[in-house]
Image 1 (spheres, helix red, strand yellow):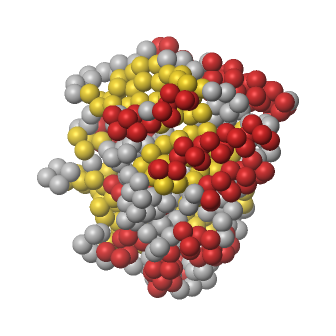
Image 2 (tube, helix red, strand yellow):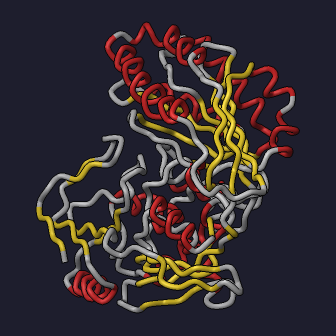
Amino acid sequence: MDITRNKIWRNWSGSVACRPRALMKPQTIDELTELVGRCGSEGRRVRIVGAGHSFTPLVQTDDILISLEHLQGIEQVDRERNRVTVLGGTQLKRLGEELLTEGLAQENLGDIDVQSIAGAISTGTHGTGVNFGTLSTQIEGITLLTASGELLECSPEQNSELFKAAQVSLGMLGVIVKVVLRVVPAHQLHFQSRREHISDILASLDERKQENNHFEFFWFPHTEWVQAKYLNEVEAVPQERKSTFWNDLNKVVLENGVYWLISESCRVAPGLSSAMSNVSAFGVASIEETDYSHRLFATPRMVRFQEMEYNIPAEHLKIVLAELRNYIERRKIRVHFPIECRFVHSDDIWLSPAYQRDSAYVAVHMYRGMPYQDYFEHAEEIFKRYDGRPHWGKMHNLAADELARRYPRWHDFRRIRAELDPNGLFMNDYLRQLFA
């Protein structure tokens, strides 16, 4: 087992830092089981860390931090039922490539692929597409290592209540050791990205959502422009990657290197934010690319930022976006990062922000090192007026009572959590404020 003691841990954005007593990386499930059992008997507190891409203090601890990075890979393939069993620490990028060797793929993904599968489902990670749910909806079974040291199986047929709680659990019910994942045949997507006028996007929003497998757009503040992205399945499976040098140059150099320079300029001189947002909008290149699905869902993210993202009922998107635009212009908010809009099908998962409603997700960002609190707080007030629910991995300011009003199965989740972990082995101060 790899052990690092008393070293500062930071998340990707730098919004969270802690000095755990030990960061432990078990090599096997047996080592993990023995470690959790020992922590329980010693009265320790345990949090499980993935890639650190959450912006909230979900894993912040001064006690034991456990990483599953050595527990990766596909364990079993069930072709008759289109399912694979995957170890909880498996990185999504690795999973995509391993599935491809089996002629398989995930039906949808978000735009970050460095996360672990356990971390991604635990926080309700999502992509975009009105016919697709969050990543958690792809899960058909979970093997959970509980506070008592038991490996507990749950699925729609077995421990069904626990399964609905565990599909989005923030790591509070135990360690997700394995997941059974519903998969589809490997397929090719055609990707298009281009600059469009926001009025055109909003005027035909329903058609764009329905006519494309995956559709999203990014509005550049202080402008009338968006970057619109479209992903649609095509029949032929490529023998090799059909990309171009210029597409790759745009993604890595222009969207990251040049954007870093723009962002640093805004950090040093915030008054440039409006002009730089316009520069960014006019710098959006028209791109077309064809490749296997998992390679196109993800986008390189090298420029670091802070983020707040809320789920709202899909029918409220236009008015929410209009209020955000009005607020930014009226208050002359110094922001150059675009506002991202995506679409997700409803589900029945207890802590999923998409619970029982077709949803739009709206995300506001601020470059790391620039003040974001006032901007995010005002955006949050708008989201709340339209029945918003925060993405669990993104910044928010809701307290337990407000969250309970927004989640019909809130108290059912708390009941399950208390039954499985009465001593709070898997809790930290942040989660205790919200759930204990």
